[in-house]
Structures are given as structure tokens and as C-alpha cells.
Length: 146
Image (cartoon, rainbow, N blue to C red; front, side, top):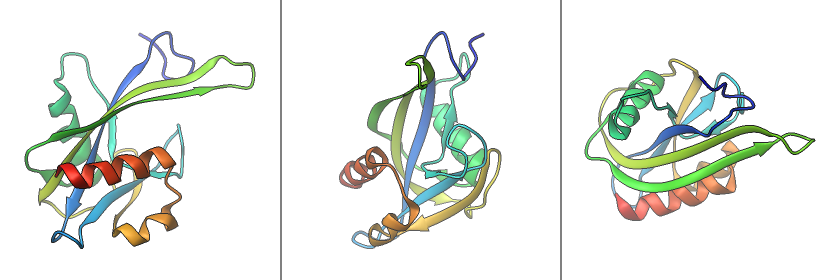
């Protein structure tokens, strides 16, 4: 089995962009990483796909484990390669991330699993979370798909 740090193959990560609230005032669910990589960084809830687990099942499992939230139908939002080389150019991390988007149907947001905080954020509040440009782009695109 490949290690996540300095892997011999990419890891598949599945994320969910969850919206809640009326159109025009929709909040998006954010999660703060409680473990490496990106410890302490805000991003979208999600995690690694298990062998034999369909992508949509992974999305729902990870979302519930990390945030306690359940969603309705999932729509593909984006596929992103997150590649982090070290100072010598070796690949320290390589994740292929499949992001789905959906609307919240049940649950109260709470941190769980490898997340130490969760937050619902309006579009104008997103800058305070220091999200990567790629996460901001995916959230913006997902707003049009849900």
C-alpha cells in the first residue's frame, strides 16, 4: 500500500461543496483540517476513497464523518490534481480530488474525524478563511451547478 506522504501513486480524495440557505444568500460549509496535510487550513470537507467504495458513497461518508451533514443529489463540480513537491522536487503529496456539490438535507454541522472546526460561510465571508484560489474557484463554479 502506498503511503500518503511520498506516495508511489496518486491518492483519490473526494470532497463535497455543501450549500444551505435561500438562493442569493447561500452559505457554504467549510472544514478546518485537524491533521496533515494542510493542518489548520480551511477547505472543503472530504477525504480518501476506500478500495471498492464508489465515489458518491465516499463523498457522503466523508461528509457525515467530518461534519455530521447529509445532502441530497450530488453533482460533479470539479476534478483537481493537488501535487506538492518538496524542496528537492520529489512528490511529497499527490491527490486527485473529485469535488461534488449538493444542498444540505439534514444534520447540524459539527467537527468530527480529522476536522477540528466547521463553519457556514456566506460568499462575502470567504476571504477570512484564507482558502486557496482553487477552492474559491470550485465554490464559485459549484454555485452555478446546484
